[in-house]
Image (cartoon, rainbow, N blue to C red):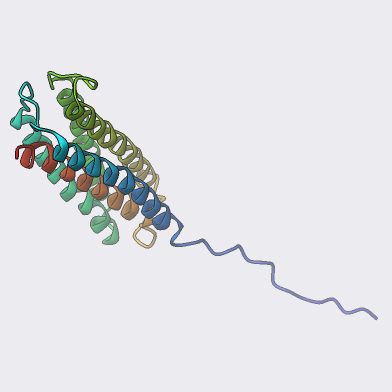
Length: 196
């Protein structure tokens, strides 16, 4: 006589909790390498140049400071999102992500405006090459960050990001803070430390 063996159905595999955080960390580390190379190139070229920046270069401080303040405001709103989600306030989370997206789009627009108003070209001198490279690298970081924030906003609006599972919103915030740090380095190089 055969006896049937009773067993529970196989459960689903538990979800990996830290994969998104690790991916965000690796993406940020890749960006750090790019910006470390740019900073090294900037300092090397500055050290070798007889005059830095060249005589014909005049950067508009108003644009740089406005970009800095926009990044600072977005740093606050992007931290508001996971804070609100942890407390179960989806409406505030959506507003915080939407405001961060709006500030990010404004930042990208002003960064584009800065690049069009420089008054010198990429190949005019070494300073022009490194400045355009820094602006382009920052712009790429901003576009990636905006995509990240948009996915977090859509998933939160679809009730897929909830107080117990706020990893996506937190990771998007971390990446956006990395974007802000990148701009801080570019701002310091272009506006604060530009003259010897």
